[in-house]
Figure 1 (cartoon, rainbow, N blue to C red):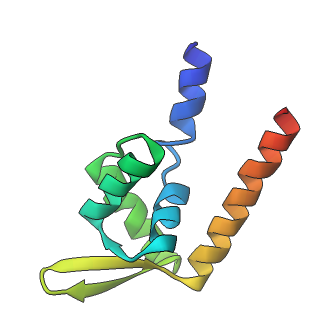
Figure 2: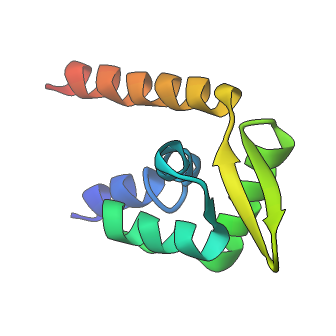
Length: 100
């Protein structure tokens, strides 16, 4: 079962950005909430550093925007991020069809 565990890890914690965009597609959130929602909705915990690193890259790439609200930074998905999420969902759907 090592192969299945590796597949799961490669498609969750090692490829975190689709999950982050999916959470942000529903509501803007701050980073702590984001990590908690990934755990709650998708069943795996992402590391704090990993989550911040991915958010930074998504923000830098224009897929996510950030806004200061008091002491917290709130992240939102952008139209560019929604398009990327749609393409990622299509990718996973097509792979699932190929493997069925």
